[in-house]
Length: 171
Image (cartoon, rainbow, N blue to C red):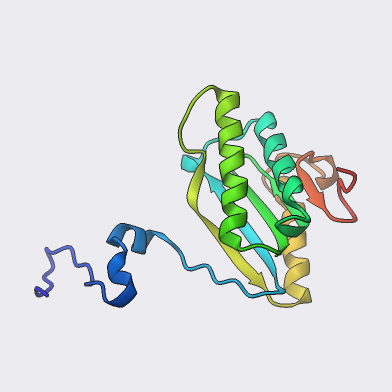
């Protein structure tokens, strides 16, 4: 290992299992730990903050609903102009869940736009919801996000918002 100087770009040498990964993939991927029986708050964002059209938002919300009861139990979701928030209780692995949603919706959105290319950022943010207080905070955050983003004046007027047993539950 060479000595680090102020002009060098320092990268640690991989050891053990990490040696099988490239530095780029090792540095890029956030750790995602999944605990069984927990609720998760998940956020994922479009590639380069691409703006989602109404037809895209419809596709995404429909895909999220389609997987409800199959890969997770959906409690809340909102599709905004360039990102999505969800609260779920996973049945399948988070990696599989996110791949299913992102892969299908990217294909459909690209078909709508008559193009190819990335739709979603590679990463997503997931957080275990630890207690009832945090659960209610996340639901409140999802419900108020379209208002805070100036997309509507009242949450109940936002078409791409869902909260089980409360908002747009007839979907």
